[in-house]
Length: 223
Image (cartoon, rainbow, N blue to C red; front, side):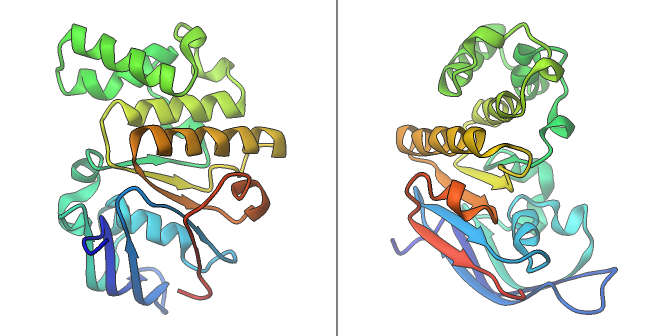
């Protein structure tokens, strides 16, 4: 456990539009295969941590950062969103904004087609992804026709095809009812165990998240 896959060391970040830093002297190590929950009150910096990990900060959210953040051997601030997308799969609370394809199959295949993969490889990886998220029967459906829980599964399938090492969930239960939220947590738990991935869940709905085991809970106060 000496080589963390995500390592914040004395890391601070201040958005350009704000006077005070959102994250101050953060020290956090997340190890390969670990499933952790990051929680805390609104405005404490939970989503800022997510944006730092997946490269949205500072490219999309400019500001001043100091200290060190290394994710799977690279610095997200240097790799940017595209570079980090091959290492970190992000599932947002508003999944509607993530859909690109007209059908479930097209949406899950989009990243692979963008990389000019062969049709055989695309078909194989899409099949594996839809099986993993239990959406085999919905390949020809439009994402707009799906329920909130089903949309989340499609978003998850879309990042699984990239063979990422880290799954990052930014408030995945925000738009789901409690029953669907529990199903989502069961699916995340299953994928974590099957694929030995590192899972980072940012969420304030503790009861639903803890429906399945979590290795560690990180509670933020004010950065």
